[in-house]
Image (cartoon, rainbow, N blue to C red; front, side):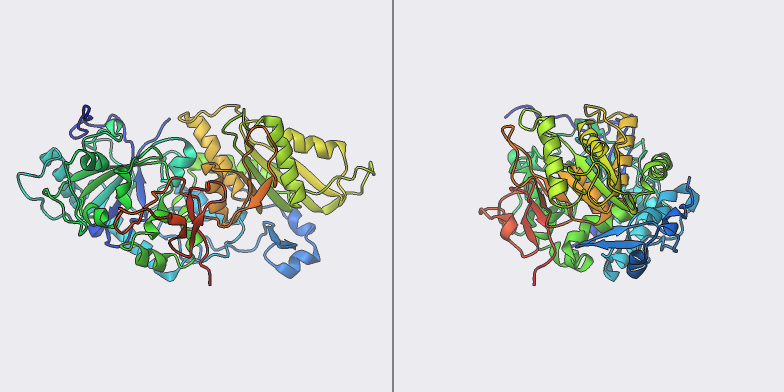
Length: 541
């Protein structure tokens, strides 16, 4: 059967790693909404009045700096007052200087038409109170921590005392986009909760380095080796445990995926401590579990807005990141009346050569009217200063920005629009784990979320974060195969919510029979970029 991994208990961490979530009795039927990260190391400028000087009567008709063209609405920053608390969605009580991005991001981003439900706002306020009461070094935290220190992972001798607070600790896996989708990174984000930290203390008595699928505290491993047996009612054949590990990466197996099953959750919600490693955005699967679905549907009546709301609540750039974001914005993006973001990730250069993908980007943006066509028959077209378009490109490679920039350098465009093209970086290779690299990536994701229209890459978590923060449905570049141009070059996404790439294909009620998770409920569908994946969409009538 192989050797089981060593126990992580009572091995002090050398540095804090991981996220955590708190919930009183796990708030039954409610997945916890806020997580706490550990350390993962791997200045406002007043908006220039020039936009007001060039604002056309068309802008005034649409108000708030919006410009309507076809079925798209572009956003122009204005000096109109903004609601920095997003209509009561964000908590008050923070020192504004401690996290300026929390209060200033509304200056740069289009106001969201998607309003959080009053019930979601209510539950967030309740969770913030709970987080204060259960945060590190509180009496409730210290009491629950003793279950780890005293039991050494075995509660078979004495029953567990009741725990006032229960904790879900997240530990990092894979690249930055995956980290953000499952919540991460102390140096990149501000603290999201008032008067309490979401960071695991460095003295936490668990070594997160040893966690993988075969760990002897892994839930899937316990099922695999018969150390635990969960009946259909959720009853287990051994005493309750103080601690368990959930292995939720894309490499998980059938035993690991029982995490989503209703009988298994009846057992797992009782755990005082759970460590979870994930690189999947698995929220769609929680809607397939009848324990959670009623509460989730009350929280998010518009199902495709789950990540949109939670990302705007949780992910506020740190001071260092916010300085980078605002400096770049005012230097290169602020003068654009319309902003187009293009995020390009190439997973296989043999299947998707750079030149081919550059042609694909051009085909997509020109055929969908996202970039103005060039006038091949006229060397000069009078510039239309009222129509300025900024193109922000994020990629490891410079070929894509060079191609667009050269096209408008060599040819006039038919409408005379003023087009400028900008790319903050092009490292040529991914450097996940480098502090400066991850900081740059986070800044670029956030800059993309300021754009009016997005073009993103198939299956890229980088693009998922940007579209969720922006609250828009992007055009997706269809992944080429065999070095051939896909037709069409891009398709419009059905939802702003990210795709769950690797859902289990079983009946979530019993987890015994085959079932297509993309056809279970009306507001779930298969992803356009990852056909085996599932995602939340707006409910159909």
